[in-house]
Amino acid sequence: MKKHITVLFLVFAMVFISCDQDFNTIGSDLVGDEHFDFSTHEAQLKAYSVKTEEVQTNNLPINPLGIYNNPYFGVTKANFVTQVSLFTTQPKFGTNVQIENVILYVPFFSTVETTNADGSKVYALNSVYGANKESKMKLSVFENGYYLNEYNPLDNFQTAQRYFSDGSANGTSINFENLKRGNDGSGNSVQNGTRLNDSPNTAENDQFFFNKAEIIVYNTKLNTTTGILEYVDANNVVLANQNDPSLRVVKERLAPGIYLSLNKTYFKKRILEAGSANLFNNIEFKQYFKGLYFKIEQLPGEQGAMAIFNFSNAKLNVNYSSVDEGAVVGSAATSKSLVLNFGAGSGSNSVSLQDYSYSGAYNTGLTATNQITGQNSKLYLKGGKGSVVYINVFGDADVLKPVNGQLVAGANQIPDELDQLRLKGWLINEAYLELYIDKTAMAGANQLEAERLYLFDATNQKALVDYSADATTNSNTKYNKLIFGGIIERDDTTDKKGIKYKIRITQHINNIINSTDTNLNKNVKLGLTVTENINYSNNYYYKSPFDVNNTPTISSDDIEYFPLASIMEQQGVVLHGTNPSAPADASKKLKLVIHYTKPN
Image 1 (cartoon, rainbow, N blue to C red):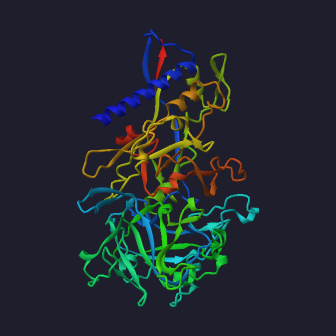
Image 2: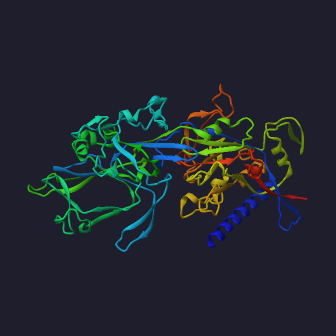
Image 3: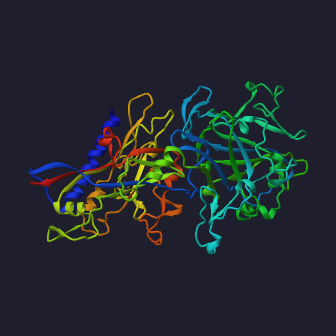
């Protein structure tokens, strides 16, 4: 109940603030004035869906990995390639170096559900998609064989390099699969060698799945004779029974994630025995060791699943023992770690490789979309390589213009509906888009609708004023900007199916109608996308710019990019458009509702 009261208060506060600003804008003073009536206006809209085709996917804040079979939109397979960087450059490995193990850890997004008396935890995984979230897949990790440029070599390294979801850059396809490197059987790096995650534990490769269990790391030490890690007790004494888990001492507990043992002979030769020049700094190191390539394959009888990762939280630890350089003769070897980091924070570039083909009803609907009239029965939104929606507000008619407070014949490049509204002197109390979900299209079993939508200024490719002004926060940051909205409203059924979305753009509409500032009152095109995280409003590029005005010979008006948050999302949703095909759905058409007051 307290949460509902808070939401109502915030909405009331926002409306009150908006009203206060609106009074100032139109020069009205309602204090003590009771001669007002309250009304609603539905603005004319054109809306149409557009395929994004391939999209920019390098250095995303989060990345998908896996196979997602969406009941409506089809199958996406996501692989991943990334550089890694030395946490410490010019490392000194000492003498009598023996490698212990090589551990790759990439944590999932997860939530602790229970903490037990012994300190162990029960987790729930977040951002995992699929009918069976523990569906088995084949995971292979290789050394990446292609150097990822940070800057574009075709313009003398003056601009950032862009890589796209199909693995291309600068118009050239890059075959990461064919260039991958692996083990030749003796620990040497060769093109198309065997994978590096070659543990006998098949859960780390041939039967990989997104395991929600806590990861337990036990105390061990290296048997310098056999080269094998052995479990030890609290006093570092080797356990007589190496097979009884109850005797082992817990070293640390990790949240669920990808936890792989990589081939230690390979990393001993490739990293620990690398020439000092290759480890001198990360520029040299990334030229020498170009990173890792994560490859997912579907198994017979399995649909697969997909998880979203923040690879900046990943670590690759090359654990070894050695005697420190300069140590007294006879000194014992001690355990050490060479840490390799991932992510933009470490200066490591990455590319999300997303294999997806438009198909079925989704592809048919996008192909049939009428961009000219903008009167479509359905609107299609999907993240990644998917689709966006563009919206024109106030219609197309332009045969009137205002002269001395009256509309007279003559065009002025402003929709007639907007000309009319500007003459009325209305106080805009609230304005919002109402977007109903097409429940027939989204009725499939295990069909998840996008959790949130994002509306933006598509003419200038930036956030709307209502987005920027909304400072509301939530303990889950994905629900920040609550008043701006766009969060799905669900029903009370077991499946919690989506009903609609609502996005408030009160100040934006007020500026268009009532502001005399030409920097604020332009009737810009609106863009609508799914969003993985409402806090991201920056843009990434289309591989092929969108010719928004159907002028093939003119590129200056093309839309080159769109919101990054849409690329990070893997869900989608089908909405009712401005002209639903079924009469029963007429009330669910896309609407821009304006609540206003006017003097009598």
